[in-house]
Length: 371
Ligand SMILES: Cc1ncc(COP(=O)(O)O)c(C=O)c1O
Image (tube, rainbow, N blue to C red):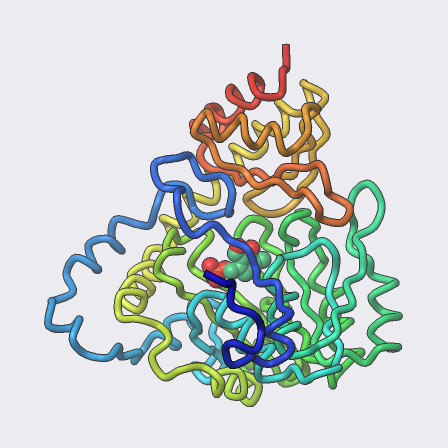
């Protein structure tokens, strides 16, 4: 049968016809040690599981209800108002909505390189032009000076900053982000704080006024992204939020569907927010496991990188592709950074528990031919 040719079906918008989508694995990961997508590697609080089990079947039949969830997130973020919180289908949903609400053809999205891979397709599907400023030097530092210049010269519609940055682990002092936001009031500055729990670097505490005044009053162009995927252990239930000034959150929320967050996600989110101790204990365990792995890498003389986040870049001597494949044979998934600017040749390895990292390290030594 002849292959269908363009024109045999209704063409999508030009930006979509030429779009290279974000590639994420959508199958074949269960049963393996998943160190490839920076998820929580053990699962959520038992209270989350209990809460989901307690949902009566009749509730499956009705559309989700959201009362109180924005308030609960607001409290967990140090006292933000409900109208300063937008609920999304994961932070991915928020990134998509931000680009849809704010990005027009020909406008600039400014960001860094390399960074989280979903920003670019979301900007491109709007016809935006992406200007990605490379991280600097061997340490892959945040390019502050170049960013300052680009911000004043390009007048971008969006500035996307990931702190700490995925995949380089680069930390940006929150004061620098506020300085950039103050210098460009017509740019929407999006701070992706998905991995904030592993560094404590956030712009939010710097905004919080002691007199109860609106924390976004001086930064109406600032939006902060958080999610329950990376630490709370409910990536599969897709809960993310955007926190910002009320008019901005309103505009971003306008482009989503009325029921984009499902009832299971809502129920799990309430329970997860109520068990911060579970999250804190997991973060502590991951940070200890990361320090242990860094020690092993230093002793073995293996190049690695990654200050912040529950992940590390590791440059295997046998090459990223072969080592990734060999680890898969051992039942361990990691992510090759092949083709990514500045970090081609690296693997990104998510950090889990101490036990999981010991298993990883034993397998890695075999796969990369260490002693
Ligand atoms: C930096 C960053 N932002 C956003 C996301 C999306 O997270 P979510 O699961 O909340 O959609 C990820 C997931 O890998 C990420 O690494």
